[in-house]
Image 1 (spheres, helix red, strand yellow):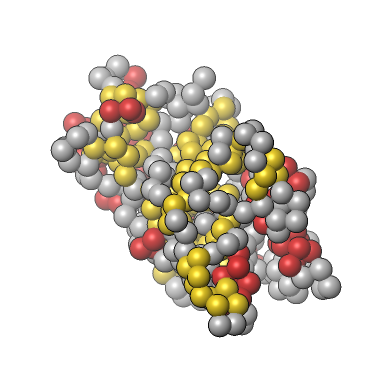
Image 2 (cartoon, one colour):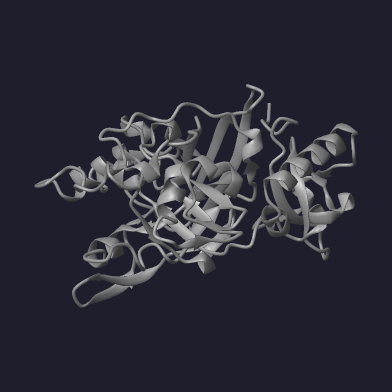
Length: 365
């Protein structure tokens, strides 16, 4: 079972050798070319379809399902090159897992652990660099930077962050949580690579900068919201301000993190404190606008157990408790030539289990 049946059909962009980029959907271990359907589906990226709005998204999905049901020719995945599925406009990353926030505080600030006083009042985030968002499979070059006073060099504590990204289709500003599905086209898996030693030196007083901006990997597949089943949002105490209510839909997504082929963690997205609808509402609450192709990510997904954490900082307790991989080697942080793969599964609107695909990257010197 691949999880890529008619109840899923995530969108992607592919090309054949020396051929143009085309839109397609994944069906099993193959791609179905959509260019023959014309209109927005004949474009070389998802942006024209995403900009058209919800009515067109629904119509396009109906046309795609009918097309795939008719049994068109398929192209094996091994024969295509996959590209970024959309042109990234802006990139924002949030910090919305309470378990992750508490873990990081306990590890890095043992003398004063706990959440910042504002954490349960607003979804905390930062603006990243869209220019360094890359498709899964792109090699990740180890970043260099200042890691201590008078010290510049390659990061020695390179880490991952298993996240879920939401892709904006319809532009807007001051978006209500109830309008989330009118503006967000779909979701994709994200690995927000992080250099923890650069981060520790630079992040005060303004937060993440060069420790994050060197690379963010995304899956080549965008799963449309129309394919995803929703669950009740998590309880929130204290109640957020009115512009963050109601919380909007939540999603029961289950991620798996593999380190050199060894599954080391299974972060549960349903445990996230802030929802994607609240993140979008907060992002635009000051009058800032979002545009087609904006990507905003959930922040590291972590559950309460050690094997549910979405970063190696948490998994290895800042390298104090290394993990053993299947080949017998021990790891605290990423070594050169290490490969990380993050995959995910969810429930569809039809109730079956579907795949979110995967995002992977290999560290190079």
